[in-house]
Image 1 (tube, rainbow, N blue to C red):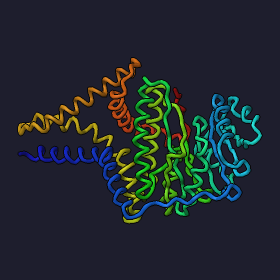
Image 2 (image 1 turned 135 degrees about the vertical axis):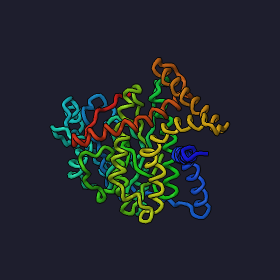
Image 3 (image 1 turned 120 degrees about the vertical axis):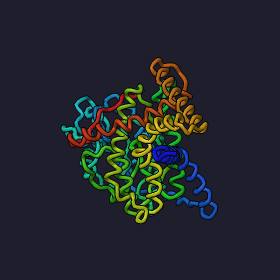
Length: 400
């Protein structure tokens, strides 16, 4: 047995373990750890005070050319179950040159913070937050609809002194059921939501989704304007200060899936690029001796998926191919190779069906998984381009 064969064998099993752990193993371990923890200690939720003693809240919406959704979003905001005198509605509309501002002017309760220059979402948040002084700030997107009870649910989690950020749940609602983008994204977010819930029960959720999350005003800080994942950087930075990110599926934001996989590709590349950017900017969090359980959760749930796992996934096939047809032939490696060939074949079939708009959610899963990981690779040149531009602005994806 030569040295190269031994090296490839070790790489194969290490790579296989990392892939399994990143996508399934961590979830299994998390479930076990939570069940063990809760045998000894259950979380106690603190009840909300009477309405006159509730904290003041700002619902903060950053928007760029959102004229198509202004009415629906405002209807949604005005129907939220929270005392009107305790709830401020703020829209920060940097760079909008459509009728967004004119439509918002029709609503008396809204404060519009307009800037003609578009520098991206993070820059808009930095600027707009200078005019916010409520105890709690809830961030949400213009194209997402929030459930009526969301604000009370979020505020209740802030009754816990150690909670510095609350992450709501993102839900994909898509009437276009034969859409691979919506179908794949919906399945992905269901799994992600389950992981977030268990992360919260173990210690802390690992980041928040920008569709709906909240922070204590005194913990907000101005981020670099070229930040691509403001929600992730802000929430994890708060957690690094010793606070926890609470996750609550009872406060949720609904939005449509991407119109098609081309539009979904824009999102995935940007998010993956933002993930790589975040790993670098939050690199002190990689130290488990300082951040303990939070560091373990962060590496297991996020870092591996954005860095090692995508590269390993596509390296595993050629390594497996060499081992399967090496002189020291083994049926085990041949079986693994057949499994990989089958998975990639299903992924290609899912791609073809998505192009032809043929409904098959089973095939959307391998296709979306491969699509998601490939875009993590493509995120590297995207991040380099954004770094040169020095802006966090991006092209919006069209929704179904």
